[in-house]
Every structure is written in structure tokens, then in C-alpha cells.
Length: 313
Ligand SMILES: NC(=O)c1ccc[n+]([C@@H]2O[C@H](COP(=O)([O-])OP(=O)(O)OC[C@H]3O[C@@H](n4cnc5c(N)ncnc54)[C@H](OP(=O)(O)O)[C@@H]3O)[C@@H](O)[C@H]2O)c1
Image (cartoon, rainbow, N blue to C red; front, side):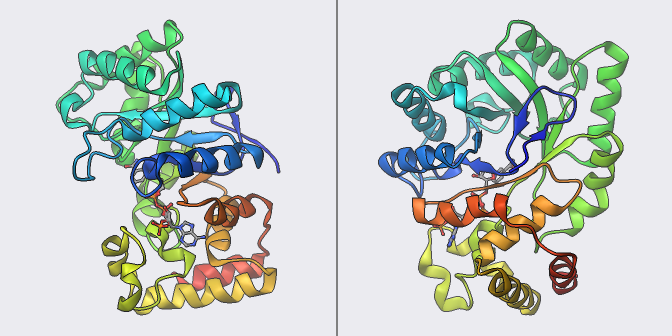
């Protein structure tokens, strides 16, 4: 497995990121620890979380995912084996990207994560009310004192990423090295038409979220009767249409040729795309995780990729 460098940073990562929104939500603490151990044992290192995970669960406030990761880091002693990403801007109590908010939010995240440095700090959402120079200035101070290594932008439009890069250049501030957009075999149009050309023009890293379309691309949802299979079922309903079924059929066929699984093939398709550094995906068991990590060892042929592209056109 060849490691990939994130843009012009010194960060080298395997081409698969583990998505931490499951920790404390659909994976309890013990399961989360086993998944994290298995992920690192498979030779992978990049873990993505956010301060807001998992505030959408009744009774949660956010910070649950970071807290579990922090406990695991402390217990396992594996901090040096991990590239850790978290995000600021969406937690109700720490909303937006003002300098003061970033400064407070990072301390909260570092405390929960039980570490002194976030490897990749993402702006979770664009904040039109805060000048980009203020946000980047706050990140600069965190980079200078060693609390953050690299910064990234999630859910920005292509135009706003370009604006942020320009502001960074004009004012001598750190630039976003990577972006985190929604992108998968089903949801293609927004990324391909807007952010992908910007990422390629500026050689930005790209880590994609909802890489399995919330589990739909694992193939376990084939009809409305399957929606009860997970707490995420309601998020998947929108994929159960003619195009979705056509994509699953192509995934089944490609997976059959490689003695693989639809989830693995979906991620391998993302890994093969030149603009993508690594897909982010999550799992709720060590068994599921195996189908994710297998993707870093699966090379699709040109014919496989053509078939998947045609099915999702
Ligand atoms: N920047 C942002 O705004 C943003 C937004 C969303 C997500 N993210 C990031 O991206 C990550 C990935 O997104 P996601 O976790 O929501 O969605 P995802 O990776 O598209 O879907 C993962 C889910 O699919 C199911 N699954 C995985 N492997 C499977 C298998 N082999 N067989 C059957 N089911 C399987 C599991 O859920 P069940 O077992 O419950 O079915 C798993 O939690 C998040 O954890 C987060 O880090 C970022």
C-alpha cells in the first residue's frame, strides 16, 4: 500500500480515512476501541472526527466522538501511530469561525482528545460572517505554537476555497491544504463540477465524506424493507431509485470479478480517482471494517472503472 502525501504538507497517509462519527453513536465505547485498534493494526492511521459529533443523538451535546478517541489514545498509547483530524464551526456552543471561537474550540477538542496537537484542523462549514483573514490568522497562531499542523476546509464552495487561498497568499497566512467534500459513486455532480477542478488546479488534498453514501453502497439496502437495518436507514431512502439500483448492480458485478464486496469496490473507485487523496468511511463493527480496509489493496481495471462510471452517469 503506497502512502500519499497531503498537498505540500509533511503528512503521509494511507488512502483510507476512518470516519469517527460512529464513536458513541452507532458504535459503543468497547466496539469503538476494537475498531480503532483493528484500523491501526491494518497499517492505516488517519482518523477524522469533529467537535460536534454526535450532537444529533438525543441526549448528546457533541464531543462524544472526540472523548472516545481520547480515551482510546490514552489507553492504547498509540498517539504516534495516528494522524488525527477534527473540526470546528458546527457545535452549537462553538459556532462559526471567528478567531476567538477557534481559540476556545481547539482547547476543548485537545482536552477531549487527550493530546497536545491536532494534525489536521478543518473548518467544518464556511462562515460568511467572519473575514477569511481572521479565521486563517487564528489558525496561524495555533500552527505557530504547535497545536495544529495542517488546516483544511469542509463544505466550502470552489469559489470560497479559491478566495481563502488568495487571502492566505495576500496576507502571508497559512493556506488550506485539503478539502473535505461529500463525494461517492452516487453523489458525484456537486464535487465534479465545482470543487474537483479547484482542488486539482491548486494541488489540494481531497478526503471525501459519505464515501459509502451512508452505507447504501455496501449493498445492504435493496428495498424499502431494508431501511430498518440501521439507525441511518432514513438517510438512505433517497438512494433507492432506478439509478441507485443500477449502481448496486454494477458494484455487484465488479465485486464478483474480484471476489470482493460492494463497499470495498466503492472505496477502491474513489481511491483510483486522481483528484482523491483518500475516502473517509466508517464502520460499526470490526467485521465491516475489513471490507473498508480491503479497498487499499484492491486495484480496479480500466474496464471496472468504466462500468462503474457508466452505471452512475
Ligand atoms: N465534513 C462533513 O460535513 C461530514 C459530514 C458527514 C460525514 N463526515 C465524515 O465522513 C465519515 C463517513 O461518513 P459516514 O460514516 O456518515 O458514512 P459512510 O462512510 O458513507 O457510511 C458508513 C456506514 O455504512 C455502514 N457500513 C459500513 N461498512 C459496511 C459493510 N461492509 N456492510 C454493511 N454496512 C456497512 C455502517 O453503518 P451501519 O452499520 O449503521 O449501517 C457505517 O457506519 C464520518 O464518520 C465523518 O468522519 C463528514
